[in-house]
Image 1 (cartoon, rainbow, N blue to C red):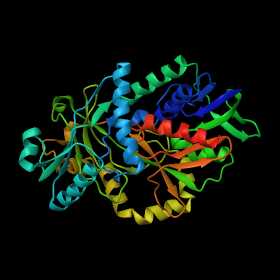
Image 2: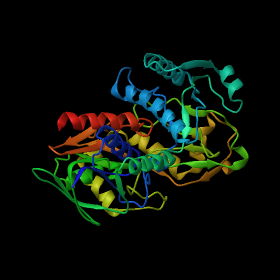
Image 3: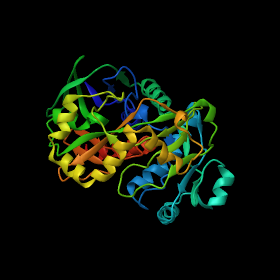
Image 4: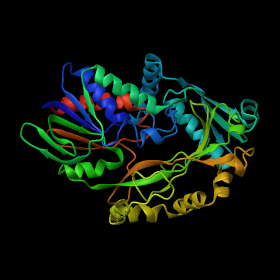
Length: 396
């Protein structure tokens, strides 16, 4: 019997398992992952950004975790020899209304202790000649990394510390007993004194399999990306972001240099037809029925239909997607956009239609299910893992 079983081989599950081994020396820790390797879903399909924490309420848990996470991620990458770059981000305002919203972000970022510099439109053009706007904010601490490489390093740490990882193992049922948790899987039965589930896109289903009172539903949102054609990969040096819509949990379509030398454009945010289907044609009837049968989904849709239609239009018409970018990067042309595999975000939605923007845990005597880890969970994974392990200690 193991001391701890962690379900989920994304960056958060791996970080939790590593932290358990570092905190509880000699503990038996097992990671179960249904895919053939680590970081195959949300972790492996994101923009690869190390966020600085500009957007979060001053003093909030998300703000603190993001600040700590950015520092911890860079330090970990330096320790492990994982390539990363701290290029900095420009948040670009293109209208007077966006300029006002940008000023609010400036106040917020300074309250969070983030190094940030306001720029005029002319100063913006001096730094990025192909970007236009009435002004911008320069966030020097924002970086880029390959989070799949971070996952591989975390997995190596787990094994080196005496833990075990079993890939291609799907959890079928979870039963809590007086002295243990029983996990029935496609590879047989495992037992552990404690269980931590970091199942991302499947978190609600896994909690249901454990018999916990699940009141939310995971609704998948596709984030569709384009690669910028090789001839224009040097168009920008910094990460280029629009001023975000405060009503939405997404940051808008942005230009992001990647650590392997590409330049990506995206993502948008459209309703997904499959939780783990990354091709444009992917459809999973079970996944669609799952959210369509949930009243909270329709309440969410009713409150966000205008933005939903706009995002759908951008998804269906490449020219509309391009125009969302050309407002700050007019040098881009339609032929510069090369479709690549999408990402999918697990958005937890409650029965009243509200989208969960914070942590959502379901717990029992021997289980802790992370049903929602808010963005930017990849950046914040190491301090989130410490928080979860401390929570386990307090509860056990």
